[in-house]
Length: 167
Image (cartoon, rainbow, N blue to C red; front, top):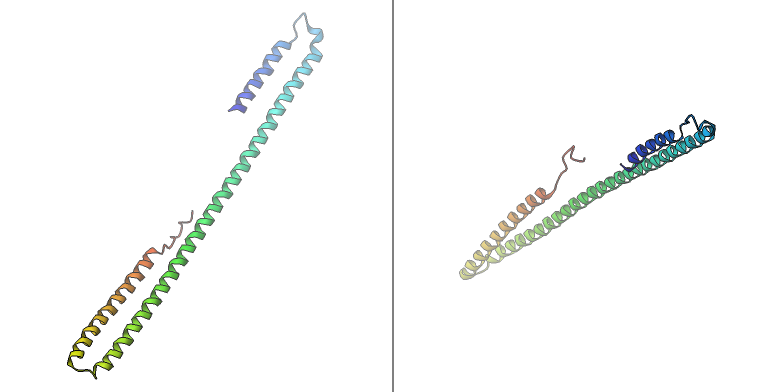
């Protein structure tokens, strides 16, 4: 707005100067040098305004390019963070599944050991063992349920970007 205003006032300045320096019947003798000087000043003024306008255009183009680069960098960082989060979720999921599987295996081993030892025990011990076996089987079922719930949670948390969602 400032440049547009300056160029308008520059045209007005040229028109005003032209009227001021227009030869009259009384002052035609000085009109040659003064007119040339006046138009040289106006031409110089217009050239300076034009050069200043080009500088402003270059600054705008450079600023636009910089903003574009900043946006591209922000998108790249966002995609990298999404990838890292997915990797962390997968790692945690696999570690948890491994943990649950080890616990289930251990429980199954203990159950087998108890089944072998229960054959040798008397009736009161038999009842205690059956109670413990029952508890361990319930624990095993609960661990399987936890594993299934964890798998479902992990798959729900993993965000797969839809095609066309990148921009």
